[in-house]
Image (cartoon, rainbow, N blue to C red; front, side, top):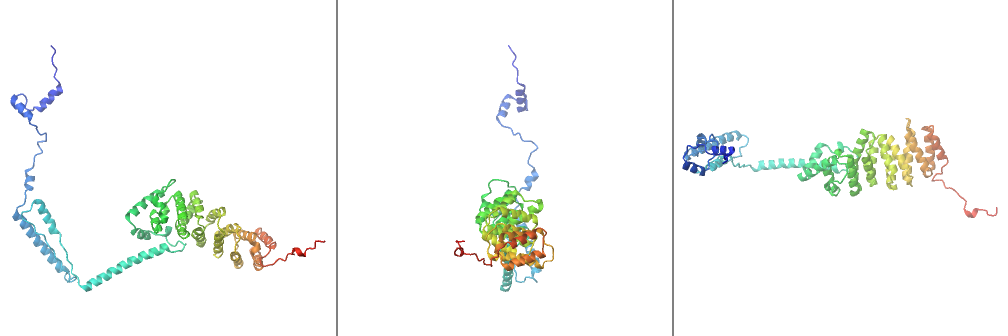
Length: 447
């Protein structure tokens, strides 16, 4: 017969399960196998010292502890009363210690210790001190409201000139504005700021699209920090605000957000980003807001570069602008102090060939005639704008204005342009000269 092979692993497990071995009686081995043995480490035995520390404190010791704590609290209170007596004689501090039961458990004893540390303070102040305190608090709160009102006035004023720091608000004013907004709103539009700073294409968040419909849209707009927007985000925001805001509110957006961004981009890159160029074209959707928020502030600043004037003027030349808005803008620019950029805008508006009112024509003539007292040599841009005016509106000037223009080109002459201006004026008919044309009844048909 074959020999039965024993499994080595099974034998080892049996030996480990039977540490006593075969010396133990068979009955004892059976009984020992029925009882489960713990596998915990023998070293993990409870420490007697820890058990002794966890014993409860008896009633006498706990009563002594409470009495000692009460005595220390009274001494501390006496010292505080002596220190505060010359300054606040009317104030009385009353401390109430909670009494603990001697038969409390360990958890109740801990709670009693915490109760002894808590005290109830009762302040007794006379009427004069109370009135003085209320007066001081009212003045302080009124000062805060005054600061907030000043900030709100700066935000809602109608001036188009930017007299504040970058994008119309400094850090202090921005913090004052955000102080009165809900934290959830701040959190949402802080996330929108991150989206707009990296925006390239696609849909914008709905929370941003509803901004024009909010009464405090300008306050919330500053949370998104328009100075960190991408160029594509500026274009999309211009579309939203130009189509949903009225002319007055759109003017605020143009002057505080769009114009500074365009000027910064031109000064930094010496050209205008395509998206910002398209944003300017979309801004002409509101021509009144465009002139009041972009063109007129740019001319009034008197630091507009020729590059900026040429880029913005090219958009005006390619776009259709209503006659009344163009006439009003031309009238305002003609009444401003002269600069090279103003000549570019005047020439572009004159090239529109609109039927301008006589008031606007007279203002443009006075704009040129006032240079009779100028001793400096005028730039070519000035001569070009004068030539454009004479070519387009030579028949709308009076005879006196015509003579004044002829005297003007004698003093400020250009070797090529002045001859062309003189030729246009010589062949023109003034508006105040009546031309007597023969009627059909005076003709002699027999001849």
